[in-house]
Length: 524
Image (cartoon, rainbow, N blue to C red; front, top):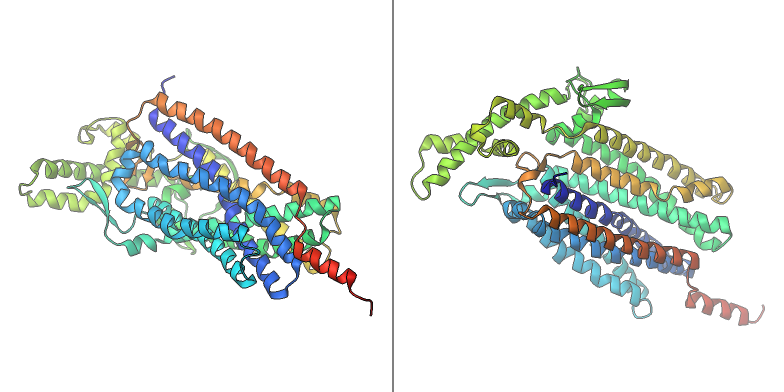
């Protein structure tokens, strides 16, 4: 079988990205929960809260180290496997990543050290400030990375320079306040909060089932249930915002998620279940809920959502306009320093935004200007991602999201009634639910990134055009190498986490001192 460098490069990045994101959500959520727990300690002076902060902080530290290590590998891949992409958009994409390293990563890394080694060297308030700085750094890191990723989904604040053959920033403000990036940030961070809440809830439930560390477990579950309920509601609300923005900026992604082959009369229905058939361009056994998709996607009752076939027609027209832009670009570059004819410049200015669509033809022909109508039609249909995995993944993510709300509502109510340990079967459910937020997060990223294909930058640069000139065997060997190394790392990480959980919290010397004093105090 012929090895495809594009497919292998995508596989490698997908593997490392999904692996890296095993650690990110727990880091985001635990950092905030640590700040909450330590705040209670500083306000009340009760050492059980200090013990809780130190225990969950140990698990945070194990997870944090693996997240940093795997994140660095991802950034190197832009230069190794996606060098043309890095050249094409480096002026824009590189800025948020650089700011993330300078502003967020160093802030987080510095105060992580103070968090672990400053308990007896800093005042209560001083250590609390360090903990909040860790949480701030973690979330700022996510912000800048998601600004970069959001620009890939919605490339605002930039323009193509035909002289340098690169995308350049024209408004960093627009890049920074890109609505897609902001929606992705709050949605992703909220998902991280849910992940941490279920992790704390499940581990605490395990302690209660075993009759261990009851005081710590009950308090931890109370924090997790309250924090998790708010985060679960936020995820659903902010996910709705992402769907609305897809209607504006990534219409094909939304149509693929819904397996909406034809444009429906407004308001569009939501397909609860079905079996999409991409070859036949229809969805078998579809069960639809009227109006729901129209309300989610357009927030109105009279705005239609375009279907896949209509969007393919739009792509076909944009490819033809892109060919005009490509032809004008070749004439501009051929002219060099000589004056370019006004009609050529005008042709590029009018059609330049469709240049990326002409590059879709590179899969079939070296010069897009020589493409046949059949090749243009194939390129237009290439803008449709694989519908079945998109359709199913989206429904898994949504279904889990509503389960999270239900579960957290139940545990929040039990915490209010002080009956968290009254139903052992619910504690078992909490333990079994620990991996579910990770599944939802990974599936969510799959929907976001796979749904953007065939674009590495939406409407600007096809994925196939962004790869490095590497041999397929070279990429394959690195995939194998990464898989082996990451397997070893995940085994080590899981072993350390399980060992720390089995061991439980360390006795707090302040608690012991207070206990000894109480025992030695004379009876009144």
